Image 1 (cartoon, rainbow, N blue to C red):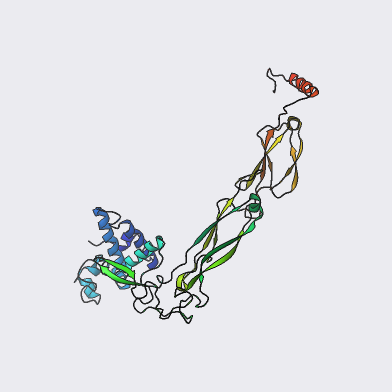
Image 2: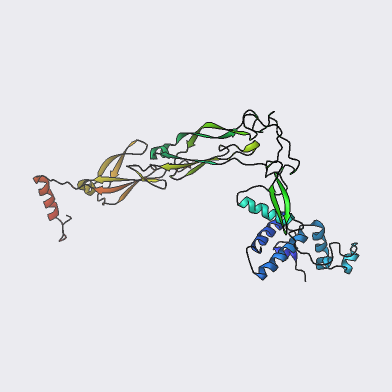
Length: 374
């Protein structure tokens, strides 16, 4: 008994072609025999999914099913004859998936799979011929202050660029080359091996998709030449250590007028002697004497943007306590700033005068606990 194709694919009866195709792709990859070796249940599901898609992808078959249900494909039944069809218009029984036959659905699957693996391109279009230039990667190392203010870094390197003589077309006259007549401009030809359709680079144009009769003398038909380049990379304020910047289209030029690659810059930030970065906040360590911690007072600090700042120390501040100074951290990329935290330490003098010793002894004697502070 035929199963409802809408239920098999898990789509509504008014589903669009795009929704049907999306559901089909998901299920056929899930139940594909290569992913489920020896699983008979998956094999049956795979057939059901393909049978369902075979019906719903074709407007005539879908309309017939919507009108007559399973009877539309029952071969010689009264419903199909009464509908004006001479018997079953779609053959004499159930539909089956044949990879050696109509490749419409499988081509979509393979196209998506190839894109997922970074090959781009598809069957029967010109994406194969549109090669993409290589992406480039460089690393820059900056100081924390550069990360605070933002900076510009100049990079010098050599890479493939578009040939100016032929405007990247690779032809002697600088005009775009005509499409290859063998592959129709796709750069690939199809051949069948058993159940599978195999794509191979076109033997005439070698996968280019174009036929260049007279090559450019400067680039020898490639459309690119090597040249020293200089790029000014703008590093934004507040950038994090390990961040990667992308300059679209600034990578290597692609052969014969294809899409250029991108340029990526990995940014590393050197450790700072004074400030430690924690997210968008900054942490600094400050050692104070005992009287300041006990009685309170004010200290002067220098912020990362070279400003002098007075910070109040509350009386009774403890060692290890962190004082928060709002808005004096790193830029957060949204127009604001993180905070600055001052971690408190203590300076213990190695030598004391007799007067200092006496004062400390008197202080220790006023302690009510049996153990002195010291």
